[in-house]
Amino acid sequence: MAVGVVDGTSEAIFQTLMALGPSRSEWDFCFSKGSVVEHLDGHTDIIHKQLYSDWLPWGMKRRDLLLRRYWRREDDGTYVILYHSVFHKKCPHQKGYVRACLKSGGYVISPANMGKQSVVKHMLAI
Image 1 (cartoon, helix red, strand yellow):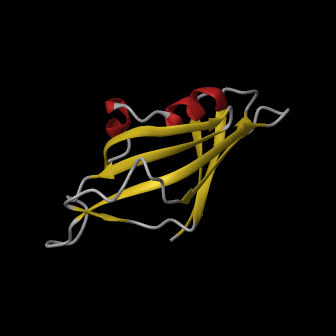
Image 2: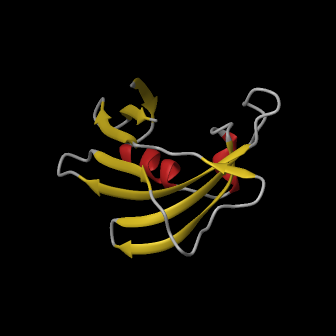
Protein backbone atom coordinates (compact mmCIF):
# COMPACT_ATOMS: atom_id res chain seq x y z
CA MET A 1 0.00 0.00 0.00
CA ALA A 2 1.16 3.51 -0.80
CA VAL A 3 -0.12 6.51 1.17
CA GLY A 4 0.44 10.19 0.49
CA VAL A 5 -0.98 13.63 1.16
CA VAL A 6 -1.86 15.44 -2.07
CA ASP A 7 -2.78 19.10 -2.56
CA GLY A 8 -6.33 19.16 -3.91
CA THR A 9 -9.88 18.32 -2.98
CA SER A 10 -10.97 14.70 -2.82
CA GLU A 11 -13.41 15.44 -5.68
CA ALA A 12 -10.64 16.79 -7.95
CA ILE A 13 -8.34 13.86 -7.21
CA PHE A 14 -11.20 11.40 -7.77
CA GLN A 15 -11.91 12.98 -11.19
CA THR A 16 -8.21 12.81 -12.09
CA LEU A 17 -7.98 9.11 -11.17
CA MET A 18 -11.16 8.26 -13.09
CA ALA A 19 -10.01 10.00 -16.30
CA LEU A 20 -8.86 7.73 -19.15
CA GLY A 21 -7.98 10.44 -21.67
CA PRO A 22 -4.56 11.64 -22.87
CA SER A 23 -4.03 13.91 -19.83
CA ARG A 24 -3.66 10.80 -17.64
CA SER A 25 -0.21 10.15 -19.12
CA GLU A 26 0.95 13.46 -17.57
CA TRP A 27 1.06 11.75 -14.15
CA ASP A 28 0.69 8.02 -14.94
CA PHE A 29 3.93 7.18 -16.77
CA CYS A 30 2.74 3.63 -17.64
CA PHE A 31 -0.54 4.75 -19.25
CA SER A 32 -0.76 4.73 -23.05
CA LYS A 33 -4.52 4.88 -23.62
CA GLY A 34 -7.79 3.77 -22.10
CA SER A 35 -11.51 3.53 -22.70
CA VAL A 36 -14.78 2.59 -21.09
CA VAL A 37 -15.96 -0.70 -22.63
CA GLU A 38 -19.36 -0.74 -20.91
CA HIS A 39 -21.23 1.23 -18.25
CA LEU A 40 -22.91 -1.33 -15.99
CA ASP A 41 -24.68 1.10 -13.66
CA GLY A 42 -24.20 4.53 -12.08
CA HIS A 43 -21.16 3.36 -10.10
CA THR A 44 -19.71 0.46 -12.08
CA ASP A 45 -18.12 0.10 -15.49
CA ILE A 46 -15.71 -2.04 -17.46
CA ILE A 47 -12.55 -0.23 -18.56
CA HIS A 48 -9.67 -1.17 -20.84
CA LYS A 49 -6.19 0.29 -20.29
CA GLN A 50 -3.16 -0.15 -22.51
CA LEU A 51 0.24 0.43 -20.94
CA TYR A 52 3.56 1.58 -22.39
CA SER A 53 6.28 -1.06 -22.49
CA ASP A 54 9.11 1.41 -21.68
CA TRP A 55 8.97 0.55 -17.98
CA LEU A 56 9.13 -3.23 -18.58
CA PRO A 57 12.39 -5.20 -18.84
CA TRP A 58 13.75 -5.41 -22.40
CA GLY A 59 12.02 -8.00 -24.55
CA MET A 60 8.76 -8.18 -22.59
CA LYS A 61 5.55 -7.58 -24.54
CA ARG A 62 3.30 -4.64 -23.85
CA ARG A 63 0.58 -5.10 -21.23
CA ASP A 64 -3.08 -4.22 -21.13
CA LEU A 65 -5.75 -4.56 -18.45
CA LEU A 66 -9.48 -5.17 -18.61
CA LEU A 67 -11.01 -4.11 -15.31
CA ARG A 68 -14.32 -3.83 -13.54
CA ARG A 69 -14.22 -0.43 -11.81
CA TYR A 70 -16.58 0.46 -8.97
CA TRP A 71 -16.68 3.78 -7.13
CA ARG A 72 -18.63 5.51 -4.40
CA ARG A 73 -18.60 8.70 -2.34
CA GLU A 74 -18.98 8.51 1.43
CA ASP A 75 -20.89 11.12 3.46
CA ASP A 76 -17.62 12.60 4.77
CA GLY A 77 -16.37 13.31 1.21
CA THR A 78 -14.16 10.21 0.98
CA TYR A 79 -14.07 8.50 -2.41
CA VAL A 80 -13.42 4.79 -2.91
CA ILE A 81 -12.43 3.29 -6.27
CA LEU A 82 -12.11 -0.50 -6.57
CA TYR A 83 -10.74 -2.57 -9.49
CA HIS A 84 -10.42 -6.22 -10.45
CA SER A 85 -9.70 -8.02 -13.72
CA VAL A 86 -12.56 -9.43 -15.76
CA PHE A 87 -13.33 -10.96 -19.15
CA HIS A 88 -15.71 -9.17 -21.52
CA LYS A 89 -16.92 -10.17 -24.98
CA LYS A 90 -16.58 -6.58 -26.26
CA CYS A 91 -12.86 -6.51 -25.48
CA PRO A 92 -11.01 -9.68 -26.49
CA HIS A 93 -7.25 -10.02 -26.09
CA GLN A 94 -5.36 -7.49 -28.22
CA LYS A 95 -2.63 -8.57 -30.65
CA GLY A 96 0.80 -7.51 -29.39
CA TYR A 97 -0.35 -7.25 -25.76
CA VAL A 98 -0.28 -9.61 -22.81
CA ARG A 99 -3.40 -9.19 -20.67
CA ALA A 100 -2.27 -8.47 -17.10
CA CYS A 101 -4.35 -9.77 -14.20
CA LEU A 102 -5.20 -7.59 -11.22
CA LYS A 103 -6.69 -9.63 -8.36
CA SER A 104 -7.90 -6.48 -6.65
CA GLY A 105 -6.85 -2.93 -6.09
CA GLY A 106 -8.01 0.60 -5.74
CA TYR A 107 -7.85 3.97 -4.07
CA VAL A 108 -9.26 5.61 -0.97
CA ILE A 109 -9.24 9.41 -1.22
CA SER A 110 -10.07 11.19 2.05
CA PRO A 111 -10.35 14.95 2.61
CA ALA A 112 -7.76 16.51 4.93
CA ASN A 113 -6.87 20.00 6.18
CA MET A 114 -10.40 21.36 5.79
CA GLY A 115 -10.72 19.88 2.29
CA LYS A 116 -7.71 21.65 0.79
CA GLN A 117 -5.66 18.45 0.74
CA SER A 118 -6.44 14.75 0.54
CA VAL A 119 -4.94 11.58 1.94
CA VAL A 120 -4.65 9.15 -0.97
CA LYS A 121 -4.19 5.43 -0.33
CA HIS A 122 -3.40 3.12 -3.25
CA MET A 123 -3.56 -0.66 -2.88
CA LEU A 124 -2.83 -3.47 -5.39
CA ALA A 125 -2.89 -7.27 -5.29
CA ILE A 126 -1.42 -8.76 -8.47
